[in-house]
Image (cartoon, rainbow, N blue to C red; front, side, top):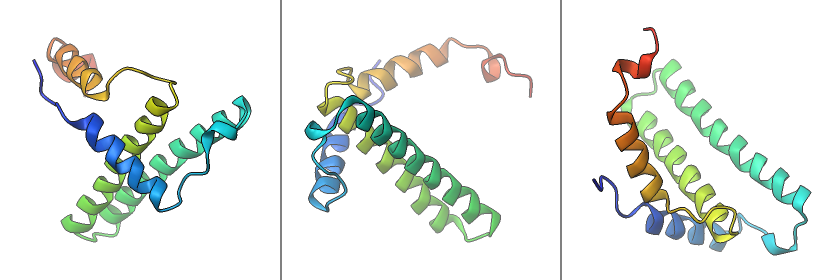
Length: 116
């Protein structure tokens, strides 16, 4: 079943916007070690956005602020996938991966077997 169909286009659009705003230096001039460091920094940025959601909830900044920070997480994740896709690190479509994961999760036990 196709739950999601346009994540890939959105990811590439978000990445193009980030490039246009100067958030990326040319990746093709990096050696393998620099690519790994770059990927780790991108993951750290995603983590920082998660922390901002946590802080917005902790400081009771309201639903609009929490939603804004959740949007930042989605933007960062999609942008990161677009970089990995464009560099050839992964060729799997994100929409396909999400749909496959949703199908897998449908067949899992309640709370995926985690004791709650």
